[in-house]
Image (cartoon, rainbow, N blue to C red; front, top):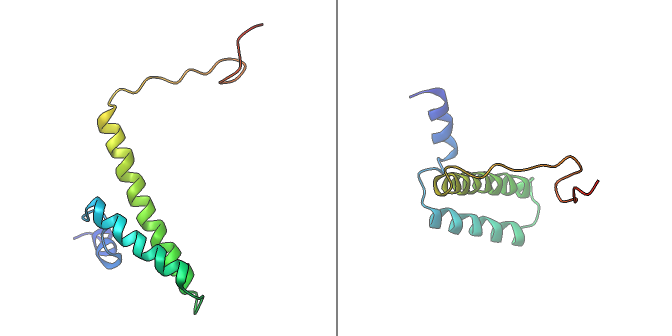
Length: 88
């Protein structure tokens, strides 16, 4: 067990939870955040925890996109900008 595994287990590993569990737990945190009064910076701790959930959900969404689109089209940028016409 490496140092990162110890840190991950101390904070609770979100990568082993299902998508539905992540959404439900994040919603419970959001409800707590909305209804809570700021006592001893509890709101900051809740906000940090919600950010952890957001990061994990975005990571999963990006991995799903990469699996669905293994060879995405290359983006084309023109000399005058992305959406401007090339009428010189």
